[in-house]
Image (cartoon, rainbow, N blue to C red; front, top):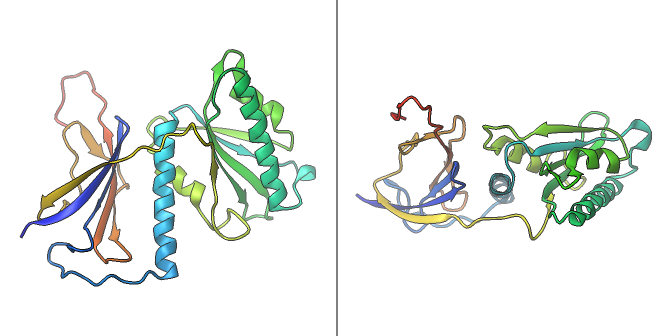
Length: 254
């Protein structure tokens, strides 16, 4: 029996994010077509969390590069804000000043940001993903040092072999991110690319589990996720592919 599933591919040229799902009106191979279930609040929360993680991962992959920064802005003990709202305002003011400095140099400031309430002593701090710029007298590291006047800061380079799945999950993690109990990360508007995926309808008995990478690619370790659509009950599969780097030794076996 041939079944139908849909495959979405987000392709950066080096990284491919793959999402597979069976349409609810067909069902998975060997399963009867199920009546649609009403979403519970728990179902919605889980699905929204996965969707947010995937969206942030795609935003990072398509808009930032290895060598850009995961920036943490901290507070000195005597300069801590009195509330979450005050901390967010200070973060927004900081971003506005950096944007203005970039604009003077003809550069559009790209960023993703979230404010976190730490687990120890409830200390607030901020996480930002930003470009590392050193052009025409504009240096990101220097600007941060000059414009963040509430305490220390810490730069962590977006790692060379990163697919940013863990970083995306961290950005949208709900437990400690804000007063109301869910995450509302912010991002620059108008200059971040959110690509449309390539969508294919696949006529096949079932997809492979574990997935198999095409020639010249490999499946990223720990990226494979198999679950179920909380509404249809049909299987869903996510995973990430990465392009193999040529060794120059004539070995193309993959």
